Image 1: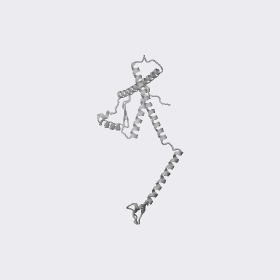
Image 2: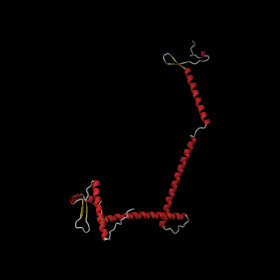
Image 3: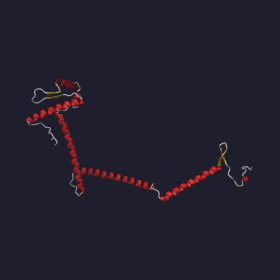
Image 4: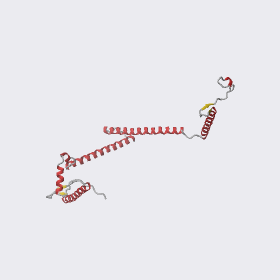
Amino acid sequence: MARKKVNLAWIANDSTRRATFKKRKKGLMKKASELATLCDVKACVVVYGPQEPHPEVWPSLPEATRVLARFKSMPEMEQCKKMMNQEGFLRQRVGKIQEQLRKQERENREMETTLLMYEGLAGRSLHDVGIEEATSLAWMVEMKAKVVHDRIEMLKAQMASNHAAAEMAMVVKEKTPLEAAMEALQRQSNSWFADMTNANDNMMFGSNDGGVDDMVQPYIENAWLDPFYPLN
């Protein structure tokens, strides 16, 4: 079962207030002891009760005196850096509640404007709408139209990308059996032509005893007509 939220207000009943003071004071001392032990910090607690002649001090009066002396030796700005009294605490609480209220009011206005927009789309006349409501409605319609426009542009870009990918797939699609056969025949023809060319080159060139290639003169019909052809 969840613990009921405590209302932070002065307790009017005397007995309840004294019981709460005793219980909370004990819990405060326990938390201070845990903080000092777990985090290795110097801490002290001084509690003045409403009807007690002397305050209750933790952990001891000499230790509390040393901690307070060290605190007072610090610069005044450092002393007041995170200090908060009852007035400051209440101001902080009021500020947080006001911020929550502004946020809730903003959310309520957005919900009312959305409802008004849906009613207008359903056929409701907007002649009785005030200037503030009309301005909010125009802003919301503009925002919704912008969202729709951005969505349309994104879908167009996706469609264009998919179309380009489909065209690329059609270009690089798998060859048909006839195309594959024609390509293999072409490769075989190119290989045969290369082999014949190499064979002709080997017939045209030879090697002498020194290892230097000599050009072999091809047979020329009617060689005696060539003035450079040897006659022997």
